[in-house]
Length: 55
Image 1 (tube, rainbow, N blue to C red):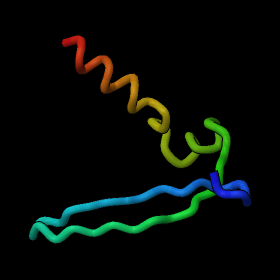
Image 2 (tube, one colour; image 1 turned 180 degrees about the vertical axis):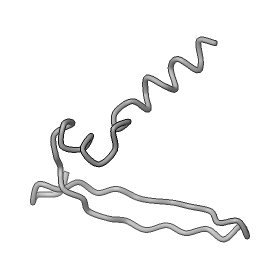
Image 3 (cartoon, helix red, strand yellow; image 1 turned 30 degrees about the horizontal axis):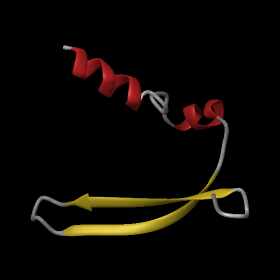
């Protein structure tokens, strides 16, 4: 975690032409409830992956 209450993330994407993009951002650390205000599915990725493996 960055010293100012933020954390570092790296976003990587590939567009339809195969061009690759990467950038590092510092974003504020917030509670799970606060994050879910912006994305109701936030925090569910791990559960979704695990349930897919059981099928």
